[in-house]
Length: 183
Image (cartoon, rainbow, N blue to C red; front, side, top):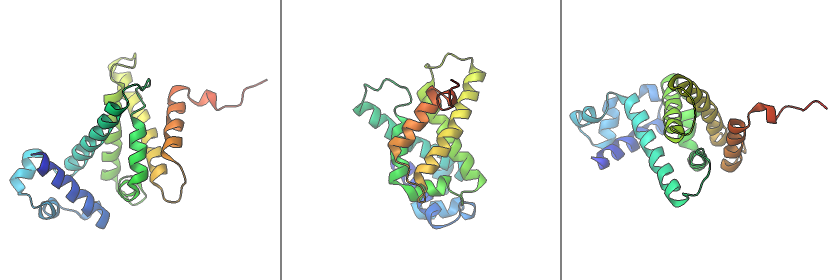
């Protein structure tokens, strides 16, 4: 089952690198992955579901591997450094997910992936009621989304470490830390 999901994920990403996401059909993904239609629909509702589910699973696995290798991180946001590293080392893929040619469904899916990862990382760490927590995750996911795009942008020279530190600083101390202090 994992091999099938990996094949579908890889096929979708390869197709996205070659053509506009809106033009990709489920059949295109099936043909490229050599997977049957009924198998696809046993796992996913549509290609958007495949995109969100498979990319989120990929990110979770990468974050889990990093967390296992470095369990001493004090901030619940520390595993996000992995996402910035992935954006830097996979610029063409992240460009498709976050760049100017990404259509609304891809942008929504990518922002949802960021929100899902942030929810995983922050659950149990914030003292907020559920509605406030959801709003906080939405806010942070847009910020994460933007900085991941900056790391993946070939016209920018933003390192993964600098992006992570910027995200962490803005998330933990906010704008007051950056505003000029009156004397």
